[in-house]
Length: 258
Image: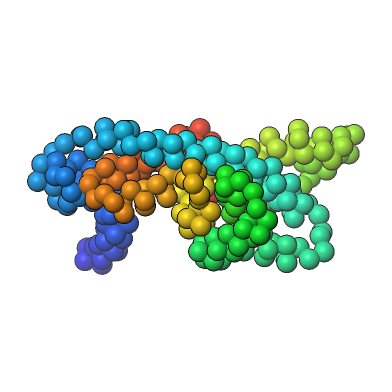
């Protein structure tokens, strides 16, 4: 009996370590005090109402939403063909290509943000375009990795059978490969969107006047305000993220690909 308690204790402490900060934020969001405090001495939902009254939160949420959706679509459009090429063809320097594709996810975000800032300063262009290009570059490694796993689990004989029956490689990819890896593509899309929506390090360098993502707006808000509004917004984002993932998990079974 005692031998079984130790693993359970470790499991409980690990879960407490992971979930504890979210519980603190959740409870603090309902505080009645004008300053962020845990545990709160009163109960109030006024801070959730204030979240929707802050204009910077509304505009930056729309920016993050559109940026995340657009960058995800672009990353899928680029990453899916790359994953297909890496798994179905013997490319010279395939290992180097995979290393280059993985590098944006391995290099610290601050380094990537500084490098992209220097690049876009020299090239020029609108702030939103810079953010879109940067987010797309960051998402491609995740798309390639997830879709590559799905393609490796798909027997190549299925595609070869379609080609032997007269289908072109493009037709076989469109009508045979894609329907069989749609779960992996959906998993890559969910992972890419959440990564873009929550991106801080790179966005911190590339945001500019009139264009800001929601995480950057939250950081700016905290510089001048220390009330439970930021905890209320964080709670809403946690609920949004969990619901988003659970819906797709229920529909497509994303845990098989992630």
